[in-house]
Length: 261
Image (tube, rainbow, N blue to C red; front, side):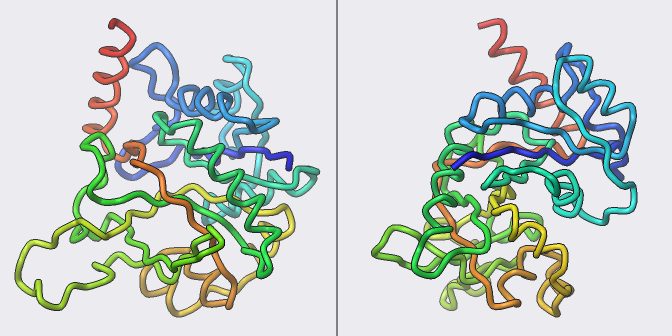
């Protein structure tokens, strides 16, 4: 199936304003992410933005950018607008602040959703997860960190696992570990990259926000509460996201070290 990756990008960020355009490496951050996406099997990569400065930066490095409404409340809504007139069968919503995303993981997600769309019970969307006990560069934190989204997966003999629930709390909760540091073994971190069909992406924007999403502030719960399913594939680690100045400084150091090796 043909796939398109869409990267939503906005200039405003409470913790790191102008994040997509930070360029201490000699490239804007959005370019690093774009170039990672281009290494996947996706036929096209698009940056969806409402800011002319970002669109100009993308055009400057030869990338593909489209302007979208400034009224979107989420990156998924921005991706849905950008995808409205595309003919691709699979749309990947990839975060713009994860410049170290593994292209093989993007390919794995595309393959997963191609299979999940054609399963006996088709999945509405697909996503990636990794063990909390992954390598240190995963940036996965601790299961007790509410900023790290946990996911519980089903077993599936056919090879397609489904997300049973996402939470900022520790799930599953080991009852006998009350008051102790939680052992990360057996806990999965959700990686915020999604695959949709063109149709399900547009349907997502029409789904009502349910009580679960309202409480946890996790938009993927909108899909589960609507009675739909999300397929999940396990990868070895998560890319370190760039949320703070310290995150960006660490990325620049890793990039420069690799470039000079």
